[in-house]
Amino acid sequence: MLVYLKKWSVCALLMMAASASAYSAPKTVLVLGDSLSAEYGLNRGAGWVALMEQKLKAEKIDATVVNASISGETTSGGRARLPALLTQHKPDIVVIELGANDGLRGLPVPAAEANMRTMIELAQKNKARVLLVGIRIPPNYGRDYTERFFGMYKSLSTQYKAPLVPFMLDGVADKPALFQADRLHPNAQAHPIILANIWPQLLALVTSR
Image (spheres, rainbow, N blue to C red):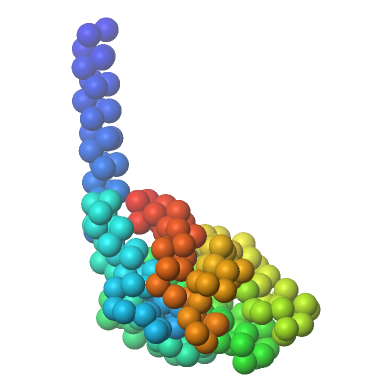
């Protein structure tokens, strides 16, 4: 019995070490987004992506963050840029925060969905895990359009088994004081809330095998 226990203890320690090694393996997180992720109108370091990088360091999680977000970016622009970004950075995780500009321009939902599908498939083909970050379009675009646009993210998440943040502006969108003067872009006080919405899903990815 003593020999058995010793063998079990050694085995358990080896498994724990292997698990810790897997969780601590360095990861690269690529964020492909628009102005909501590009610190539009903010001081550098105040946006949710920069705050995420700070939090990863504070949690002693070995991860490199590449913010490839561009103000005004659409799903078609993201689709066009993603191949080169995957080749250059070889990310383990790709955060796709796109669609707001498609919606604000009233572009067809099927076109945006096709672009998103291409990006997800390309990232997964390159062995990267995908995190989808959803957005809601203002109600003045009509109930049918806004609901179809919002539903696009859930549909893609289910189809590709990709984790989803349903609405990145949850807790922000209904508070005018959390927006800049243009009433479109969140101010610095809003970005910690945005990060809080995204963090649980991101943490699960960066700490997984």
